[in-house]
Image 1 (spheres, rainbow, N blue to C red):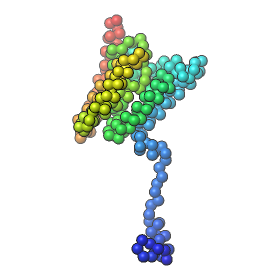
Image 2 (image 1 turned 120 degrees about the vertical axis):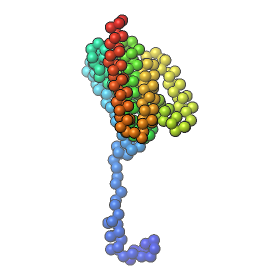
Image 3 (image 1 turned 60 degrees about the vertical axis):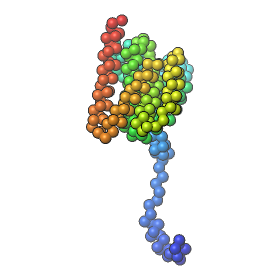
Image 4 (image 1 turned 45 degrees about the vertical axis):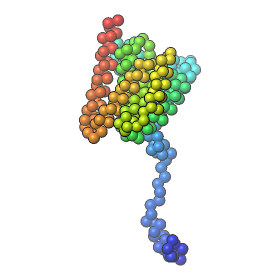
Length: 254
């Protein structure tokens, strides 16, 4: 007999009881990380890192240091060059530029912000809504650059989408009636940094505004999924139309 919590049990009873109990399933490290940080957040980070490696290898092939990845042919073809979009129809630059970075420090800072704030938003919104927020905000930053930026200067970086995270968190915290002072302080610091030379203030503000707008749509239509899809689709169409049509008129009028 085998001692139990109450009395004794025979060996056969213990074996039968153990057979009926499911063994705990051990998830992989990637699954555990995805549950903790968010699968979409980690996928976006991986995409940015992969693109940095690709541009670094391309720079080496062209005879430059891998740290000078912005000199690569791949970087030149994928960065947001407003003239390239408006005059040559290279529309993909509007989104591909959001997955490029100028040097490893630029990449590290943006990916750290994406990991911290993106995982929080992904938990609050869900995977696909968070992805829609991120991509629409990246597009919003690109639209601001197309409309008001120097059409001769290429721009790149995930910062346009990173600022959407701050705007989106602000809207969610406002809807939950949480204290916004800490977030507003962080936002003020980041806007101040955006005035430094070489930083795209337009892209940052565009991402911030569209991020807040998209989060507002998600909050207001959270109980009406069909309306939510229509509203997000309409916003994407408006942003694309502005990026692909208005800059052409502006450029030709110069």
